[in-house]
Amino acid sequence: MRFKAVTHRGKIRKNNEDNYFVDKDSSFFLVADGMGGHAAGEVASKIAVEKSSNFNLPENNDILINLKRLVNNVNKKIIEESQKNPNYLGMGTTYSAVFIKEESLYYAHVGDSRIYIFREGKLKQINKEHSLVADLIRNGKIAKKEAFNHPQKHFLTQALGLEKKLEIDAGKENISAGDIIFLCTDGLSDLIREKEIEKLIDEFYKDLDLLAEKLLNTALKNGGSDNITFILISNS
View 1: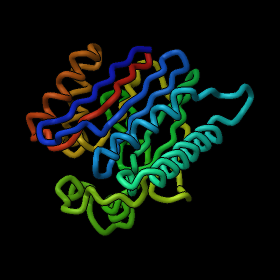
View 2: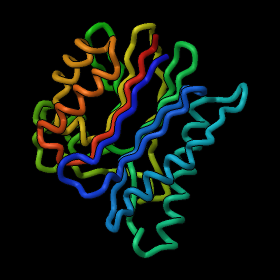
View 3: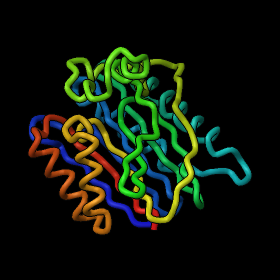
View 4: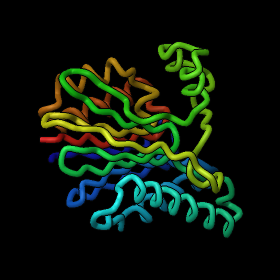
């Protein structure tokens, strides 16, 4: 298994409030996009990484149950820290994690970051985004192609740190040799359309370093208006 992780401040923001975590030995990968004033978003996403860095899966235990428990523990910790410091009040973060075991990918997700599987030239999003625009698409109010330029696309319906009760999107997907797993924050997905991401992966998937460079440079060329974080994982 090969991987490449990238995080970049972008061209507009003063701080990078994104974070990511990679544990190659346990095949655990995470991206977190923080939000909140006074750099509190950076604090929230950092807590997400720190609380997830010691994730250990008990033997003979349900992976999805443990991933959900991890997300709830992270959420609890962020809320606790926000209550201690007035500057952190209202801070939050998205959370998109995958755990790969044998030929299966398990994921847990809250927010509007994305998890994709690229297979045989096609890009498939596997997670459910928690955003107003995603709800509009699911309810048939707007077409998916309208979401890219929708004025309310940054309005989240869920994030860690905002409420004690979460509706965590979690699931399992079969993966095959040659698949590319792609996690990204909206700093990338808001600036590169899916078809273009698909085209770049299809062309450069054999060289993850070059692919990562192409993805980052394209997002920056298209404005770089947000922090940009992504992880590419090659199941080979």
